[in-house]
Length: 103
Image (cartoon, rainbow, N blue to C red; front, top):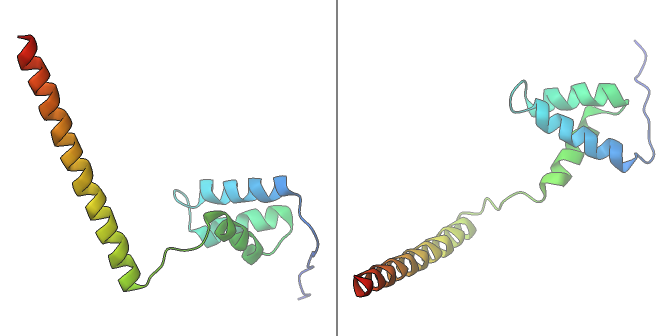
C-alpha cells in the first residue's frame, strides 16, 4: 500500500471555515468529532488531524482545568448571582411600591 499523498501549503480561509462548519454540523448529531473530521478531510484532501486542529483553533483555548482557578470562577459567578438577585428584589419592591401608590 502506498503512502497517502500529503498536501502542504496554504488553505483558502473559506475552505477552512466551511470545513469547521461542516465538522460542527456532523459531529454532535451524526458522529464523533474525529469521524466528522475524517469525512471532511477526505473531501478536501487534507489529513483529519489538520481539520481537527482548525476546529480546535476556532473553539479557542480550553477552559482551565485547574481546580483552584475553577473554584475562583465559581465564586465570582456566585457573587454575581447574589448581586443580580438583590437587584432583582429591589426592582420588584420598587415596582410593587409604585403600584400601591397609584391605587
